[in-house]
Image (tube, rainbow, N blue to C red):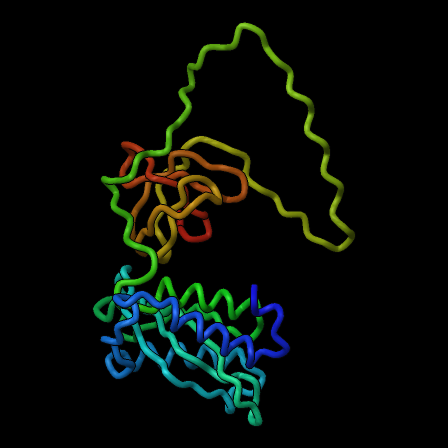
Length: 254
């Protein structure tokens, strides 16, 4: 990556900005959205960035735009920010993903904000990638079409036994954790565990930790078909067939 050869953050930020301008898709770079359309969304994103800076009062912004995403009530706030202190003139890319509740359900309009600020070489690269995937109208992950996704196959319970059993080698016993480090217990694979509700908008994966195949909305009721190690649940809308896997931290059980 060219940014690894730069001598300072400013040079890297300028290089990333140049890549963004030269690699920008025409349709994705049209500036049809303006910050004035979503002042509350922009304010929540900027407040989040300021709260993570060493000197919040000196943080500056420029070129900020707000883009509605494909998922309802989700917005990408994109632009440049200077988070390096009062004497700095270094602006870097940032992307903030803001999710707000429907005003009819939540008059206070509480916000969930995730920000990525290119204040280091690696973070600048990530911010550039997020800019290409989110900073346009209708960007980000698409809603999950339930009827168009092939279900994850489930092994039948009555599979015929092989003619000759093969004994697999025993898995090595992992070393004990260092003193003072907590032991993380993972659930063992199991059968269906009832129903859950999405506690927030969350990704649905093709397999545990696999590729993202869609997004389920907050409040969607899902049926759990099985569980896997690491806190993964195989879920579906209704109890007919599963659609994919979701991390259990994104749902709440009935």
